Image (cartoon, rainbow, N blue to C red):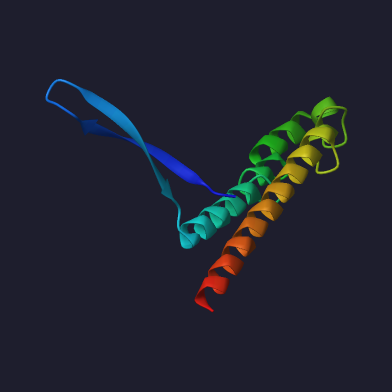
Length: 120
């Protein structure tokens, strides 16, 4: 799968007329591997133990405030339990983060395999 970034470069045919031309540039294998690693790390932030995900746990800022409010916002309450890793919202976030991490790892491995073949 080719990943490319398009940039427009002006081409002057005369002093009065400029026409944009589309030029494709491709990421190197190292850049693709680095991008995959960055995506993997970003996805990890949304997992239960990640920078963002941990804030929704009972010990985190958001989850802790909900825990203090209690009632339906408690981790076992009607609303609070939806934010756990088994709940509808928290579970979905956890699954998405894991799938994105798996995909990023696959891209990284495929990229590294491709560069190993060229070296041999």
